[in-house]
Amino acid sequence: MTLFCQKTKIKLLTNESMITLRRILSSNLRSRLSTMLIRMSSSEDDNDIPDDDVCLLRTDLFGTVTGTNAACGQFYLQDCKWDLTVAINRYFDQPDNARLPPWIRRMVSQDKDTVKTMHFSILSWNLDGLDNRNIVSRVNAACDEILELEPSVLFFQEVVPENFEVLKRRLGEKYQVLENNDRYYYHTSIFIHRTNLECTEHHVVDFARTSMNRNMFIALIEFDGDVQLCLVNSHLESGRKESRIRKSQLEEIWSLMAASPDDVTVFFGGDTNLGFGELKAVPANVTDLFQDCGSPVDACLTWDPATNANLNIPKRCRQRFDRIFVKASKPARFKPIEFSLVGKKLIRSSLCHPSDHYGIYCKMEKIENIEPVDNNEEK
Image (cartoon, rainbow, N blue to C red; front, top):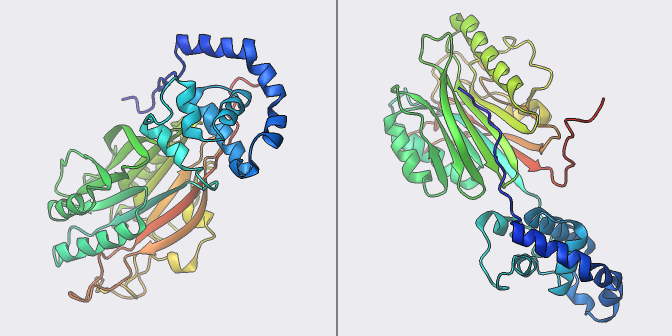
């Protein structure tokens, strides 16, 4: 099975538009550019010109959408008072008010008045579906917290028919549900937000060693039109006696991450069942997002009998079972900025928590204006 394939990029410039662009550049673009600064200072109202950083962003976005350069972007943007939508439509010989494709509209909407930061976030949560007590009220409480945060990606473990139906009903309007084939009574599931994520393919890969039907749920995703992601959701083997099997499963995931292309960001998250001291080290190019965010003390214990009403076991058995790891692309496309726990609120009607696990939530900033890596560059 090939998990990674070279994706054919859509060419935005047709042969006809390329000829038109060459004609513009050869006939009058140079002369028009030579008077650009004069026109900006004398014939236009200063109030019509955005701030410098906004102008720069709109020029970059124009170039990204049309496949042209900054000079061509300035030429078109100047003629329509820096209205990016109108400039793009004029370039493609469309009416000024023509409706742009969705992925272009998302880019244009970023710069209306200010330069906004694009965020990406992941929430991973073992929903304790194997405990049927208060299962409907518990998953509804989980959905309440999820809808408040609206993470980009949701990793669920211990999904069963009883809570899966509630998840799809409560979250289906905002999230696309990636099917896991439902081969077993309980399984993992991935939900991706409908606004700026597109799934190109997804697979379920069984571990070589497992006595509990554990596997990797892998999805290849495109974020915000230009960032390639590989998402890996898993529930590693449970129990203290299964440490060797659990570690072998983790090695399979590390191998998958190592094999990913440099331009793909890989996120692995889920219920790892790794106790303190069980994980000695991670691969050199992989990091733990909890540690990347400064190891916040209040987000360390994801399975905590001392604070979770669902766990009736000795309070000393406190663990950080739930984790999210990342192998960053080259260059990196995300900067982690926040790591926290969800599901710590007690459900008053049933006097329990949404799960015996707390969910983990990580928020990141998308890094813009990166320079592509030249794989052919001599070292």
